Length: 78
Figure 1 (cartoon, rainbow, N blue to C red):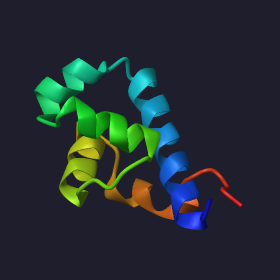
Figure 2: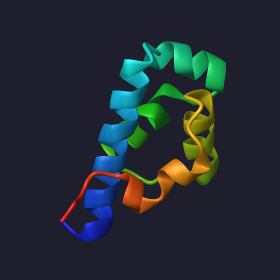
Figure 3: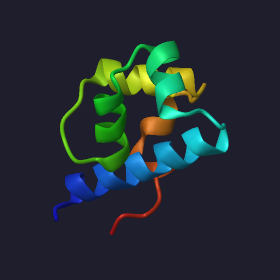
Figure 4: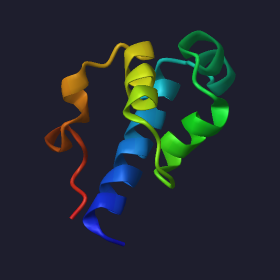
């Protein structure tokens, strides 16, 4: 696994944990943030490509600042 793949997985795990801490379900996020549930799963698993629009909708719905997406805010992946 390369560094980018590792970062995507860690980002997804972190976003999922934050979503769960805020008690926001996948279906709720799908309705309110207007993101297809398959995209939400993809973001949280870090397994496929998704658009920056989807990622920003996800973060905005959880009220996370864009700066959250900087790699220094993620757990160490190396």
